[in-house]
View 1 (cartoon, rainbow, N blue to C red):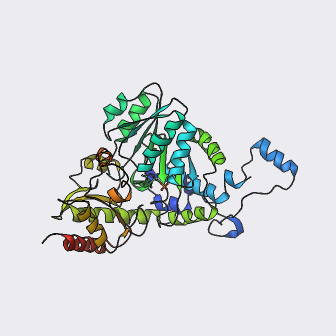
View 2: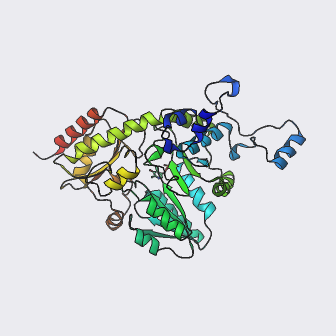
View 3: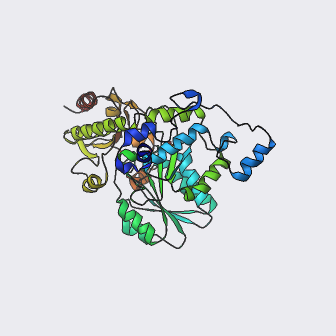
Length: 405
Ligand SMILES: *Cc1c(COP(=O)(O)O)cnc(C)c1O
């Protein structure tokens, strides 16, 4: 019993490995298997008409059709809720499907949402280009400007949205202030905590209504799946779950298995991501060719004190600017590294590197890039699980080889 209890306690207890391995799982599983099996079923059978009627009338907890859920997905959702310290988790086919699913189920024509402006480019695009077609207004305010966020609230405002840390600037949001503004104005709050994960940050414990993850990243951890999750109260998520069942943004049974498997090593992996992020950022911070490193674990990061107070570690993502380099000289460094692969994404075993200007903002005008804070000399590196000394040697070599003598 005491064991059961600890599994449902919030991640604040920091027993994350035990929760990541056992949380949400039944002790005895189908076929006496130690792992949760992959149920490749698009539909689920009833023994007779009466059992269909009984299922509908009594709302029995069983499966009906694949778009509404899958047995191992339920296990995964319980595990994610336990890791986050939330009441319920809802799994989606990707992080973007999760954001879109939440916003579409919560917002009506005429409603407004307010964003801190440093954010995943596609989240902003979904709101500005698509929600707008349905009469939802998106207001963007400067990240960390809490007064501006509060001033932007109108009677139509339904949701305050931010990432923490933000992608790719790694700004850290003061969740206490963010939540307090929302509560005072009776506006719900959403934090995209993809870059933090429940290992490093617990937004639910801080009072945030919805926590969102691109589980494609650290949760999956192996660069081999796409998934998204929203964690919050069962009451608030009911309408989101119902709409997911209609929109069909559900994961394949095989993906669910991969995610369950990836989570078994969640705590170990996060420890290494944090250690590698810290070591790489410290190395870069002392390198003469580097103008600036954006990493909350560095003492000179503007939010270092807040990050230290509210986070357990600072993750594997490191963003840095090259001194006096144009976009091509910056690209030369990206091209010169040998270990990190050139790709978008983060959170997997393999380190990845990219130049935001090229990878995500190539089609923007210079003015838009200035507005989004994406300079030509910016590199984003997602430290994987390799040995930190190998990553540092590789970066050192690339910086020296491409630098002027
Ligand atoms: C990757 C990412 C997303 C989108 O998630 P997908 O799983 O790729 O759809 C959303 N927010 C952040 C912060 C991300 O890094």
